[in-house]
Amino acid sequence: MEPLIPNSDYGKMFGTVLVIGGTGGLGTAITEAFVKGGCKVSVTCRKVTQKLSELDVQVIEGVDMRDSDGPKNLVSKLGGEVFDTVVVVAGYFTTESLGNMSRDEQLKMFEICAIGPIRYVDGLYSGGNLKSGSKVGFITSEGGSMGLRTEREGGGNYGHHGSKAAQNMMCLMLAYDLKPHGVPVVMIHPGFMKTEMTADKYADKYEEFGAVFPHEAAPFIVDCVARLELETTGRFVSAMGSKGLGLGYYALKDPENMKPGCDLPW
Image (tube, one colour):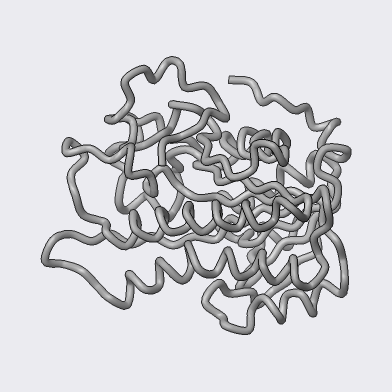
């Protein structure tokens, strides 16, 4: 599959970019894609990595999705800069099963995946860092889709599925609120990722479900942001279509017709 946007068009498509959560494999890959396209990029992280420090970006350290004062502090550090494109990549995932649940881990997943991302974008809006015409993309997951869950996949991972479903719902509500202000929103399933977050949980399923490396998915993710329009704000899409969809693939009746950027069931 070929990406839809050549690097030479990134600058005019995305302008000034903010990536929230740039230290993980996917966050770094998305940041790299924007940099290679010639965009001016700022990226947040909790602690800067060697890889991030080597990129031509403004790094804003000490940004944590669980920090109650985080959005206010980030706005202060941005110094009034206005962004054309914002992509929120922060996430967290631990496994659970019947009889083996952790309240603390469940709360952590909800804070990082659902509550934090919304609060940070709300902070950017309230702080004047978004304008009419800005675009916002949230990295979420097909794991948050009730329509893609099947008995074949089974249960478990309650906090993961619940937090991603909550993120999808909260992002949709945010999309409705930001629409009158000219800011469209999209929720993006990036693909089944080969990252540190999934290696100890799903490495045995990489081949079966067509798992991809972050740098393979990144161009398709930014394509989804590029196609954002106010008329279609609030979509929940799969960046790579049925490729790399993960365990949700079990629910598909016609996967060949699911192309990059297609809508996913809620």
